[in-house]
Length: 488
Image (tube, rainbow, N blue to C red; front, side, top):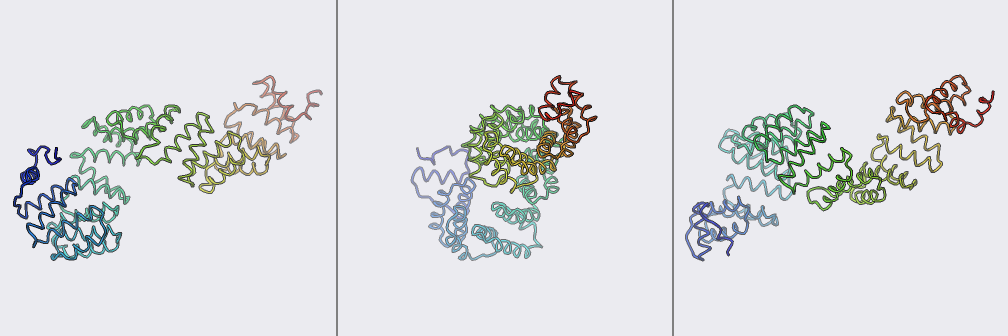
């Protein structure tokens, strides 16, 4: 069946007339207005072959009307054709003040990446029509869309702002531009203006409020969106994001499940569901979803590989984790989480030189995170590079001064390097943060022994024995030369 033979009854009369001539292979006359309406109809449907065919007919029926130059130039621009094709047509057009000509001229500049020329042409032209803002409001809006299409948001924002006749959809695009230019206050103002007519405005408000940590406001507008349209997947998705931000992971999981039930091909909802499962420490379930998303076209593959590697790391499947970390690393060689993940996985496998190498690369990206310093320090300990290990752990400790494990490890290293005062200091700090650390009183007692403060040594050793009858045995393993104290 000819694809022009779909139902005609819901189409405008001029379209029915045109498609009927195609079906019956007839020749009929169309006036200029009918042809323009036909071209605009198929332009809105993005059907370029039909536009081209009608333009051919129009040029044959009305060869002296140069509006076809503009409409064909627009078609060439829409098709991303070589610049000379549309530039030649625009140069031939006689009325340089025609609204469509102005818009197409700007689009032509933008498609040729002549951004400065597009901006200059727009500003110069609009400065000449300041006294007629209403008359040219539609054109101003079209120019805004031309800049928006190319991601030049500051110009699109300014043009939307200068238009006097915006539809709700136009206002939503205006607000989006404001978000991109960090003019969030204006974006919120516009979304509030549209919220009664548009669920999209409510959802966008919810996303902004979530980002600003105004959680009560975010919850209010997102619940309003869901009440108005319970099958709006973006409303459920953004509610899930809000709940995850608030660490309400069970609720977030339910919201993402609703979004996925509405559209099971929503990979972004699946991705965030996996994140939520990860936070709930359901590593296997999260891993399975990430594995499904490896071939997703809507999420960058390295991000999925990184998340999958982190799940495998938590499942202690370190060789597999390294494999996915490495795949992510090949695509993104300067990402801290990838590099530090590789360092940690190598550490768990016992590849200590590789641990040091990747920890150093991570620190080149960001040396203000304690974990890379800690992993490097531990690897250096296994490599018997104690002085270097101490320096690495000291760096980690400066960044995380309340980490009891770092304090305990540093205390142990200071004992090994005979820095007994520092050992005592760090063990006591660790003890203050957590008095239940295994053998902590024993280690403090060992420090006091080497400082020759036997009263304090005995005091902590007594505390240790109250918890563990074998504490004295452990103490003597660290300092066998103290045995004489127990024989007096």
